[in-house]
Image (tube, rainbow, N blue to C red; front, side, top):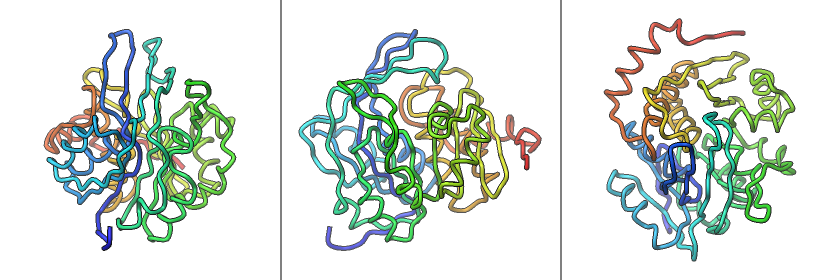
Length: 304
C-alpha cells in the first residue's frame, strides 16, 4: 500500500472459523471481531476498512464484506484461526473455548496504509496483535478501542484459557475505549461488581469502559455509569455479542455522546443476538426497537 486511505472506522483482527456447541446443537459460523464489527459499521453508513488474516479457502467472508462496501486489507495465511466455542449450560456467559489453528500475528506494516477516525482492535488470542502494532496505530491520532479478550486468552495445549496479562499497563495507556465482559473484568480487577471493575479499569488509562453481561451493557464514562439492557426476542447468536456491541458503540460515538451511543449499541446487539452470525438487520428495525424499548430515557439509568 503506497498511499494512505482514510476511513471513519477501521477494524483489525483475525477471521475465526467458529464451531459452536450449545444445548441447541452444533454448527459452524464465520466469526472474528473484524467480521462482526464491519457488518455493523457499514450498515450504519460509515466508511469502513477491515484488516485481517485468513486462509484462501475462507475468502468468501471477505467477498461478503466487499459486496457490502467494506474495503478489506487481507494477508493470506496457511490456516485460518479455528475455534471451538462450547456453551455447556443456558448461561451464555459460561463457555469453553479451544483452538486448532492460528493465522499468525499482525505486524506494523499491516496498518501503515490505513488512516481512520477510530480503530477497533479485536483479537481472539494473545499474540495476534503485538504491542508494536498498537503503538503504530497510536501514531495516527485515531481513537483506539481494544477488546481485552484477545490479550487475556492464551493457547494452552489447544485450550484457550485466561491468563495474567503482563503488558496490561503498556497496552491500556494507548487505549481510549476498553471493552470487556463480566468474566474478564473480574479477572482483571478482582471485582465481581462490574461498576467497581469498570472504574478500576478506567484508572489504568481508558477514558471509557464498556462491560457486557448476560442482561445488557454497562458503560463508565466521564465519572458516570450508564446501563442499557438487551431485548432480543430470542437468544440464538451469543457469539459475537461483544464484537457487535463495541462496534456499534464506536460507530455511534463518532457523532454522539456516551449516553446515546450506548443505547444504540444495546439495541443493535439485541437484534444481532436473535440470529447466528453478524448483524444483518436494517436501521429502521434498530430505530423501531429504540422507540419501543429504550425511549423514553427512563429505561436508560444514569448514576453518579
